Amino acid sequence: MNAWENLRGELDCWANDGRIATLWWRDDDAVDITPALSDLTAVSADAGVPIMLAVIPALLTPEFKAHTFPPGVRLAQHGYTHNNFARAGVKKSEFGPERERSDMMAEIAKGFRDVMELDNAISAFVPPWNRMDMTLLPSMQQIGITAISTFRPRKHTELAPGLRQVNTHADVVDWHGSRGFMGEQPVLAQITGHLSARRTGAVDCTEPTGLLTHHLVHDIACWRFLATFTRQIMAHPAAIWLPINMAMAA
Image 1 (cartoon, one colour):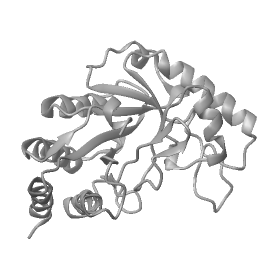
Image 2 (cartoon, helix red, strand yellow):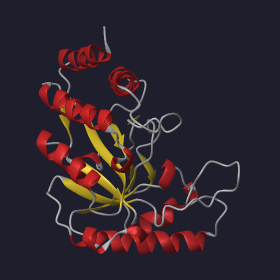
Image 3 (cartoon, helix red, strand yellow):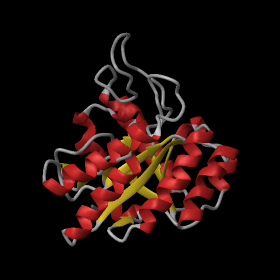
Image 4 (tube, rainbow, N blue to C red):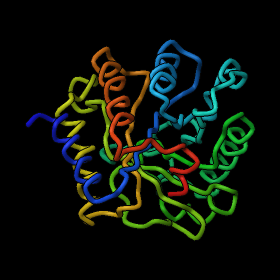
């Protein structure tokens, strides 16, 4: 059985249980209206799939700020400058324990205000490299951030009172190899594996399965996969793509 058949078989199991598998889509590092971003929104629109763009506040161009996105595209804050402040030998992070809390919160608050001024903005925060100093969370909730999105199955529905966690679970980019498309087999295995773990209770069944993409580095194989995958999910009666506001409240 190939990876596509495994995915359909897992969704059939959801159907047999009388359940609906929920999925959502996050794309990181948007800063400008590029051909790649146009390709991304075209795939989203063609398949009728909502998408959350994680945008870097300090790097947004005037063209991006003035652009009108369709209703299915929502914008969330992705750090502030997306610079790495971690020490050598430590995993990358923009908001890690190496920095002063006051400096980090000032940047997060400034970026949050700037993003929330954009059309289609949503009060979610995506830390660069999917990691951050978790002691910042209560202060982030106080400035109006209501959801955090990183990577891997969540262990807690809320990271702080009123601060939802809604993660992604499958990355299409081979960051440690070719930096191109990861390949159908591994990407679909991540998706199918999370769906199976949800169905069987091995992870939080209420967390929608999240697809993570980075439009600026996609190759042709990646674009082809996304066009096929989004339509395959839409075609199955036991699967739906959630609107982003619903995903962030899941």
